[in-house]
Image (cartoon, rainbow, N blue to C red):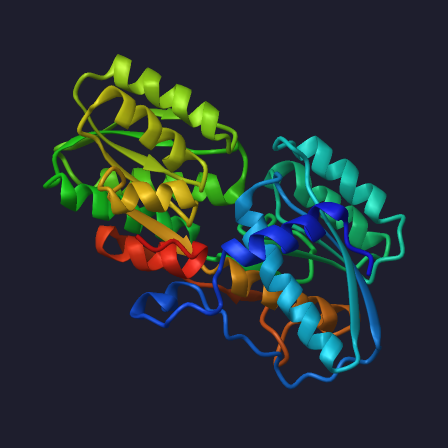
Length: 343
């Protein structure tokens, strides 16, 4: 099958240590839905070839890939072969993403999908591809601009709300008093910017709370670690940090542990180190997105788009996926479910 070596390697090593299917069910399984089945739609062809690109090579998209692979497997059971490219740059770059998309437009792909790195840069590129006759969708964590001609989006449609919920939890923990810094992620990435927007809006509701600094770590743990060290040095009265992607709670927690400071950290998703820090009380809460379902639904929608179907009864223009807030008491179960970690 036409799958890049990076994905094959992930499948061999990640599927055995991440997302443990054999784990005993618990109430926290609702954060990630593994038992997915294809809907009743009958594909018009027996072979589809897709192109997917995303922001950056990162474990978050590895988890999405597992959902993609499961949908691929189920289609194969029905006699439908799904092949695809699933590639991204080592560092977030909208320019790189635009080049990849334009190159993909020259290939023989039924659908081109993208997790948008920068709404302003990529949306016009998607319009350009659509005008040339390509079928284009967005997926994962970031949609294109609202007026983009892309056909559909599968992923998180509530990033502002996720940022607001995380920050509300932080504010409550601080008794609605304190100084807070925000680590955003990649500048221009819709999901990161929207979560930061939700964080600012929430903090703005409380007169005794203040956003003292905002920084972009470019979805890098090391950058988040260094930026958090700068926050801690600059603000001796820093009370909390809102982290808007999967990388920055890891970097922030490393810096806070190293400094021995009492700072409330909230952040996104299911990084193993972040879950361990949640278990150990370094991170207060995490918003876990159902990456598996995002990948699974992306393939289902891509098949329908390839068949010439448009949003409506068969699939919505925006497929909504869930985010679940988890706390310290949930961490051990999540580590066991996702990584097979048993203390």
